[in-house]
Figure 1 (tube, rainbow, N blue to C red):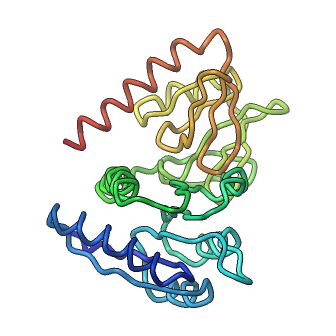
Figure 2: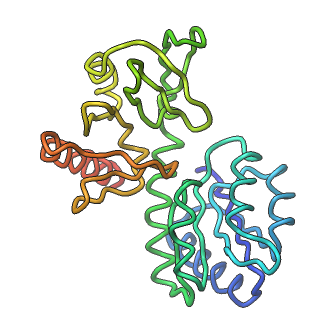
Length: 249
């Protein structure tokens, strides 16, 4: 079993201890191997990120003179692999500011142990999928030249200005192809087309807002859902979510 490495960064030592105890109790009951790393400043956490590949991080937004959102952006640049970050804060108004950095969850203080346990349920579900996921690759002929991408690097494809944008975690590539060809190519990798101009990776959906007919991706970008495709998308996404939960059991 993989050793989980969990960072906890908060300038309040009592909250550090509470989060740490809640995590320890949860993981011990489920027989996970783990190490907890505690930090009181964002600077100390960033320094540790050069040496430790964290499984996930619990991060306070208000760290005195430091801003947890900026710290999270720096973490993304340092860590070797995408990492799920859970924000903890006393200020609900910060929630809209963290979409762009692939926030996994957002906990409002005071935080209960049951909230932490629920977040850990979800974190471990996706973490186990990520670590067991076969890194299949696909080659694309782009404007920039031939490129090879891992499936899980791709967030979505967007048809714009007569070409297709391949939006990845760090870069956008451009190529000339038809959306229907991408739909056929990527369907088996859990990609779906909620709109005639988009083909998206369902794994990278951060929020599905049915009432507004939009999807918020893991990078914070908003994808529209067309009325013609709304019913089909909802059915496909629910099937995908149910499949993921069945695999978790």
